[in-house]
Image (tube, rainbow, N blue to C red; front, side, top):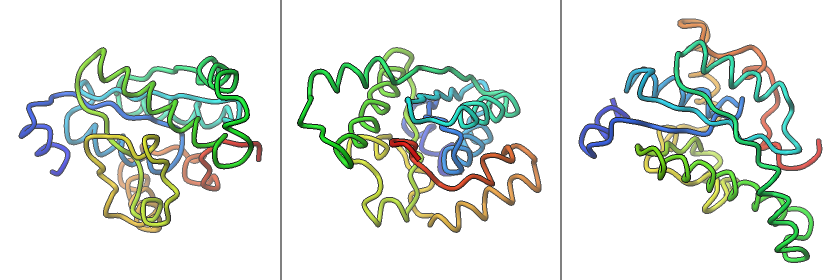
Length: 184
């Protein structure tokens, strides 16, 4: 209801989201497809050098089962350019990881700018409350469907979706949470 109502009131008929193969983006993809119809939703995977190939495979599998659009844009060309350009400003740790989240958001916003619609944020309340979401990165989006759900609530909702509708792949439900922004 929230996604459908927001889209209708805003005059936006299409939604785009980053689909990582993780549980949060999987739940948002299901909600968006049900709210707007599969033909009005496009998911984009933006894998990095640290992304487990099973993550992108699970994202592709979910998109196919939902009947939503799916595209892959590799992060590496942008990431390598940022490393060359910003060099020692990135360092190791948070700076090196946050730039990837911000580059992913740039890719997603480029899709929205080129094709129209709105970007759906895939962060949950736990990530936002703990500061785990990257400002101008995974916190981007016109609407945050999971913004009032804690991570345990998202997991419960994902398991319910899986048991009642079957959409969410096993790997997505069983994997440990990871932003996949660093080795391991």
